[in-house]
Each structure stands twice: as structure tokens, then as C-alpha cells.
Amino acid sequence: MNDKNQERDVYVAIADPTRRKMLRLLADAEELSLHEITPHFQMGRTAVSKHLAILKEAGLVSARKVGRETRYRLNAGPLREIEDWVSFYRKFWRERMLLLNQILEEEEE
Image 1 (tube, one colour):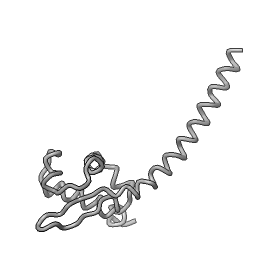
Image 2 (cartoon, rainbow, N blue to C red):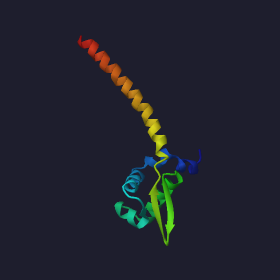
Image 3 (tube, helix red, strand yellow):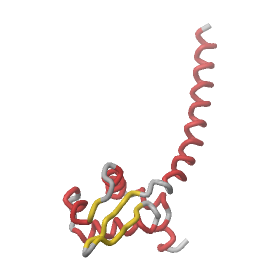
Image 4 (cartoon, rainbow, N blue to C red):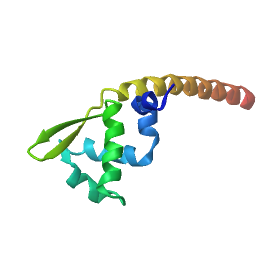
């Protein structure tokens, strides 16, 4: 897999804590500009913009021009892939915990 494809991967995009924080920030607002997002991070606008570009390439963020500024909005649809993956393991651990409970109850008797 080349670097460009990895940037578009949802898992790669959310692997970075800064980008996860950006997604959370965008989830709490309808739309934000780069100017409004940058103060929430200890980095410059260029670095914030690069993070937003990775989120956009992964389809997690959409952008639209309003005059001279770009406004960003969360697109949570691609996160469904993550939710599906996690739900499999949630079921896996639930079944293991039920089995462990059963074993412990049998030992108590």
C-alpha cells in the first residue's frame, strides 16, 4: 500500500490523537473555519491544515469555500467502518465474559 492510500484509510486518519480531537471539535459544531479550529491546538495553521487534509482524504471531513475561507464539517459516515469492526470485538469479549462468569459460578458451587 503506498503512502497516499494510507492517508485515505479511516484507521490511519483517526490513529492520530490530534485528528481525533479535531473530529470531536467538528462533531460539537455545525461547521468551523481553519481560523476557528487552530486555537484549540498547540500548533500553527499550516499543521492544522495538514491534519484536516488527511481527514478530508479519508472522507471524514468535508470542506467548502465561503469567500476567502474554507469551512470544515464532520462527515461521520466513514466511522461506521470502525464501529462495525469494534462491534465484532465487543461481541467477542461479551461471550468470553459470560463464559468466565459461568466457570466462576460453577467453581463456587
